[in-house]
Image (cartoon, rainbow, N blue to C red; front, side, top):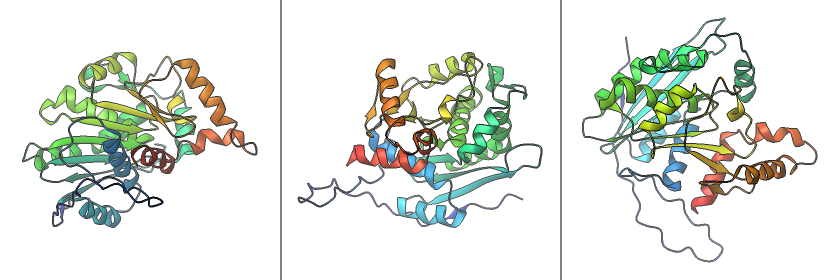
Length: 298
């Protein structure tokens, strides 16, 4: 039996625009805007917070949801058994009067690297039989998608905007969930998808269909030398648009020429002279995505 959603008293905690801070006093981070409809770094920061929150336990998620002004929470969990390489798929959905967020949990860099390096698994059919996706992503999403869809249909009673987010594996699942809603359940289509350090997820056919549906509402953040977005290898798998690149100093770029990005990645890779090869894993950490985004909105 599916547990009833945890109901939490909804409180509107939107703050007034911050006044200029006194010299030496940190500028506060702007509050989550439940009325947001367009891309902004502030909105990206809060969806990154939601993606990071997916790594916490249910009690912590519910406590933070209340602080953020969400009145309803539902958790989604499916456990797997060997030989499937993942232990489980986890996600949660938050709802307020104006906004719904579904965040998918990621996994450890080493685990996903080993998994994505396995070329023996067959492809999984894409949403609406459009192209294909990595088998592991397809099976992981399939395990929670019916519950996510049912929850969105139940919670979306006020025309709320819907946002999907996730880090690492969670980013791949957020992108695929958004694409599947768009192609199979358009009435529940997401207003935006923000991912952080997601791997390549699908073939070019599905990527093209996704790009058509989310031309100005999909944002894929990559932090400098993060190794996970380089897997699995091309050309079998590819990325969707639109890239937001975080350079070695933490600045977010809406566009950067390939040569400039290669130069910046080399700069980041050699910044730590004692462990230069660790940059790819370090840049994948969710806390480093959050730190960069916070730096850009203060």
